[in-house]
Length: 172
Image (tube, rainbow, N blue to C red; front, side):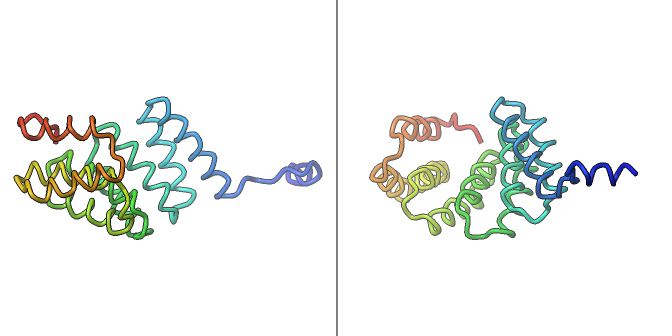
């Protein structure tokens, strides 16, 4: 009886895609407000509705990373990479999380892959330059610094990061 009434008034149950989009939008809003726990919950609900959308895993990973849960972030970035291996942002963001937990070798690999996919990305060169500096590879660091500057990186921020590494106060 109730279903007939819903049919008469044109009500239909939201599809999984519509539900996923709703949860995704709530996740983006929560993340924008700095509510990362809420964002993770909303992105998780979106993933439940649409488990084959790499963007959802990437956004949840970003929320984990912003709440310093880098191991969880890396797992979601890994999933996003498997689903969409040609998206450079995922490599950059996973590299940042790997750097944050001190996995410098894998961070360099991720930044290098981001550069391979988008060779005009100043931020990827800058991040790799910082890791090279932390590894003591001054020549490669200087080369990436120069490339990042030519591509228009925020020079003050890059100089701050490099100074922190050189003085031994880098976070990671």
